[in-house]
Image 1: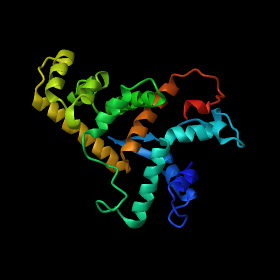
Image 2 (image 1 turned 45 degrees about the vertical axis):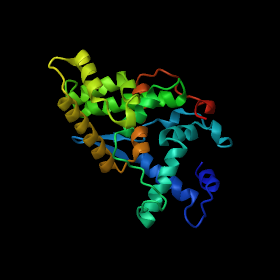
Image 3 (image 1 turned 90 degrees about the horizontal axis):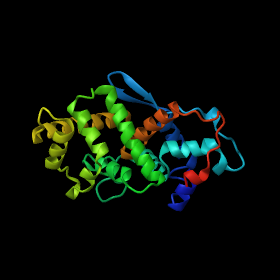
Image 4 (image 1 turned 120 degrees about the horizontal axis):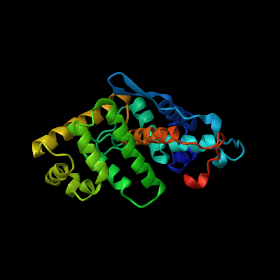
Length: 248
């Protein structure tokens, strides 16, 4: 995948090799993420002894399928290339290529909501996992009665609140009304929602900054947490064959 990615984009071999790009992917995959309060999450917690092996046909090799799922696909490969170029040459100037991939806006939550509420595709399934993983990680630091936790539960239950908002701005008034129905008393106010939103965004920024994550890494992390929860409840046979049609 790395070699095809570079070849399709006309990347000269002197700039970047497939092996170098793969090393960056493994570095991201094998690390640990600090979620605060001394808690860490192991990024490589899957049991690869239980997947099928086919060294002659990579598309039918469960290890290859697992890796592609874990790194987030071609988009994640593109982001890893950006990481290597920034390490070598620094961040690009505006309008001169290599745009930043870590926007500090609210759009990440709008994207998560859109993915989770889309049609029943593989992407939609992962979108729902992103929400579940986000809620699971938030639960490590914040009590269920915390305003931040209640706000996230509402948004996960009603993703349309963010999808229908113009310009990616949060519809604070609608959120206040829905929170009043879902969690009051005490009554919710715009200031209370704004404060919970600000704390949520600050938590996200700290998580990204401490672990060197961009938006693709962040969503992949949340989805991976949810998949680990799913694996914990599975009673599947010990040797699994992963069908490549499920990830194409």
